Amino acid sequence: MATKNDLIEAQSFSRRRLLTAFVSGAPGGKELEPAAPLRAVFTAIALAAAVILVGVFWGIISPGLPKGWDNGRLVLVSDTGARYVTIDGKLHPVINTASARLLIPSDDFAIITTDQQTLSGIALASPLGIVGAPDALPTPSGLVDDGWTACVAGSGVDVRIGADAAATASTGAAVVSSEGRLYVVAAGQRFEVTAKQSDAVLRAVGLGAVDPTPVSAPWLNLFTPGTTLAPLTISGAGSPLDGTDLTAGQVVHIDGNAADELFVVREGRTLSPLTPLAWQLYQLGSGLGADAVLNVTAAQVAGLPTGDPVGSADWPKDAFTPLADDTRPCALLVRDGDGARTTLAEQPTDAEASAGVRVEAGHGALVRAGGRGTQAASLLTLIDATGTAYALPGATAETVKRLGYTTGDIGTADQAWIALLRTGPALTEEAAGQTPSGGGG
Image (cartoon, rainbow, N blue to C red; front, side, top):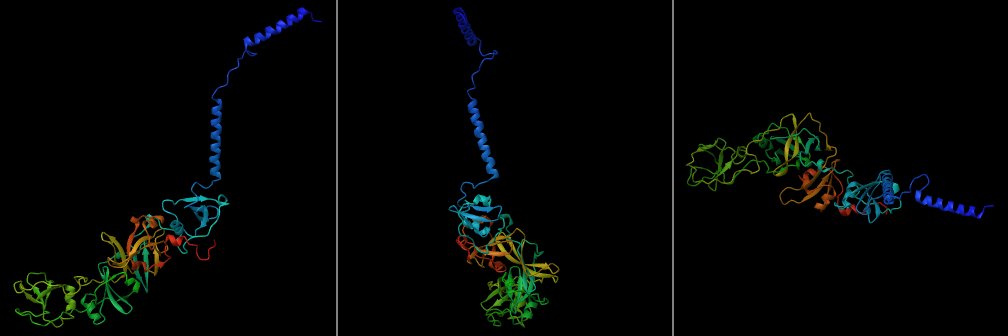
């Protein structure tokens, strides 16, 4: 049994051991260090970054709908091919691209591609769109506003837009027949040949040896109507002019002038210019059986002022030159500083030509088509790669932008060209917002 001294000594030993522990530090000689104060901050940042990365990765593998999807967006469903226009948070099936674009304001238009699973739970609404509107619109760079050709192909017309037809503009003239009438087509005009003395008239204008080419009325309408080619007559022919040795209707040549510069004496005491072509037709009319051209001096006719030319101002000055025998007549739409116009062209007869409309793949046109004359109304028209023309009645600059174009992309063409194409439905914002016939809601 421990004595009192033993207990005192044991207590002293414990006290010394405890003191030594406080003074000497942790067993093994390693001091305890305070924890780093920013360790918790760095840990929190790392955890937050991990959460963000996980969210991004999840968004990639499982995309949702972006902000603003619920109004004015075209939604394409990758796994079904369906497409919708979003209006007030609802999905409206849209039947073609043109309708979708017309429905969405140009500044809001955006395409969202997603899958059917992402759209589950979103309300479906009634289908919208214009039946027969184009599903593929030509790009702005694919618009063709000149170089269109329309070549005679039997009883039809071979129309090409952007597709090479091997047709070139011609300075010659073609004799054509349509619906029992004869015409001379030259440059951008068509001149009907009077039924009376038609053979004589064709000989007089330099086309007597040309066999007429049958053409359709739509092709002929591409050319502006000119004044009928017919024998020329003047009033009072044969009446003497008082105070002169001249007679009304007499043809004179003034010494020193070009050989083909002729004038007709008129009963009003004027001299009317007579072009070489008009002179030939005059000989079939009032000049029939007249004496040879009378040469006069400038002094002899000094008292006679120059009057209006005999014949029509839209006739060419000289006789026509026929197209080459191995060519067929075509119309060509050309664009220059004065705008777009139609002119006669020719195509080799060995070139392929068959009735129909051909448009270069991926191309089309956006033109303001109207009648002839400065006061004629015009209508904006879109032509797609199928050669179908779609009118855009009441179109504004916003309408043009909705379809993906600018007003600077618009060309011009005569309405007669549009008449050669297939006709599609009118494209308007109002029509695009309607439910197609037979559609559900």
